[in-house]
Picture 1 (tube, helix red, strand yellow):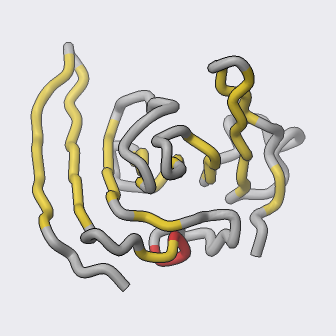
Picture 2: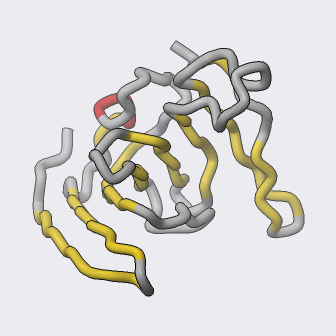
Length: 130
């Protein structure tokens, strides 16, 4: 289990959108991802960095072995995006039905992400792999 080595907090604005960015570093030994996903998904791998963001689109690439958590203005978790050892997104866990309960009857649910010719493809929502 990695040790919490460094953490920070940044608050600012992006255009007219206010956001908070909370970055935590967990050391050289990545922790098991299950420690960071509220849904308890077994699809989650190791996590070294955790970033919490508000009001921003979550990118498809980031630091390797990291998770970016998107929250709303009240701090409620909307989405977690997990990145592999190459920094490419491989999994989204969504805590909303995207306004379409027929297509997303399970909340939370997970979307697996794969890259084809450099283009990310987000799979259909599936029940959490517990």
